[in-house]
Amino acid sequence: MKIYISADMEGITGVCHWDEVDHDKPSYSYFQEQMSREVAAACEGAILAGANEIFVKDAHYSARNIIPSYLPKNVKIIRGWSGHPSSMVQELNSKFDALLMVGYHSKAGSGGNPLAHTMSSSKIERIILNDRPASELLLHGTIASKYHVPLVFVSGDFGICKEIRKINPLTITHSTMHGVGDSTISMQPELSIMQIKKKVEKALKLDMKLCTWAHPNKFKLKIRYMKHVDAYKASQYPNAIMLNAKSVIFESKDFDDIMRFILFCI
Image 1: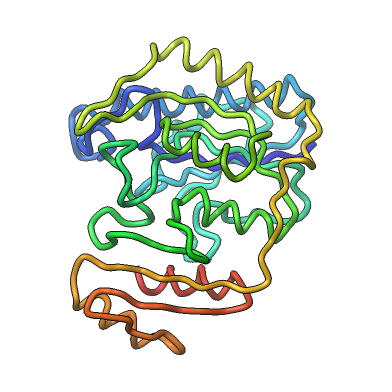
Image 2: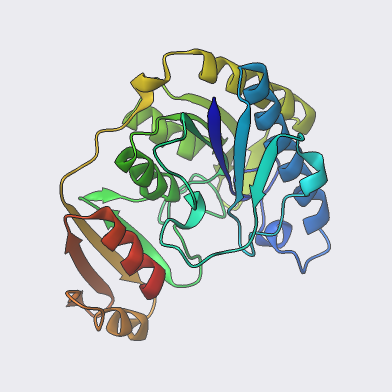
């Protein structure tokens, strides 16, 4: 069984402030270790379920956060950013049996996490995909649907767990925290690690095909930027249309085009 794990940091247990996910800040090292341990727990759960090949994508900020030595020996880790449009699921393809997401977070414009955002916390107010407010889970889950790879497990804040349950209620979730204003209410870190391991094993022993999304045949992307100048620049992309001073629309029948637009325009 070949498994892909995409790992972010803003949904890791205990996180409540940007300093905690910024490698230049003193508080980062603790949460770097917690992220590494939660990803390792997901790997261990996958191995117990029968996985013999696991790819992990470090998908936060520099993509150099997970401590590689914390991971089991049969894990390959993708560090850094290649520049490929698949971004947080780089190298994912139809040969994988399942996708897992660890440490994911609520979408831009929502209140589920003080660190809620989609792709950029400094440039983007909101992203809409096919009339649905888009999270990083929705964008990268749609890439997985192109390859018919089921998204079987998601850990992160309450908001992102609620979102995936609306998309597919059969996906196993693990809520690490609940955002309240600029605070978070989090579970105990050791308990969180134990539950991730247990739930991943469970998720990979179920009928995973039931967690496969239908892949749409056309896509309409709307991005609202924080600044007019960023929207204006994005509107210069081929076939992009400026909707208003801060919003741009881009449409395509190929989701690779959508992710390519995001790559170059965010």
